[in-house]
Length: 78
Image (cartoon, rainbow, N blue to C red; front, side, top):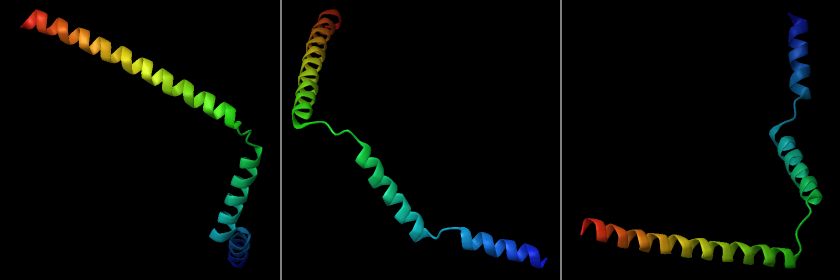
């Protein structure tokens, strides 16, 4: 019985508390962020422009299809 209590006490002492866990967590985050290959300003602008143009084109296609299907609907049911 005494040995079990001693083992439990040792296990409790080995476990890091919440502050130690948080410190370790943020250190790990910082080390991982150092490994990230961040894009250059030119790459970010190029990718942003590509996304905006793609969204505008797809929005235009959807708008044209919606308009055409709306006309077709009025011709069939009106």
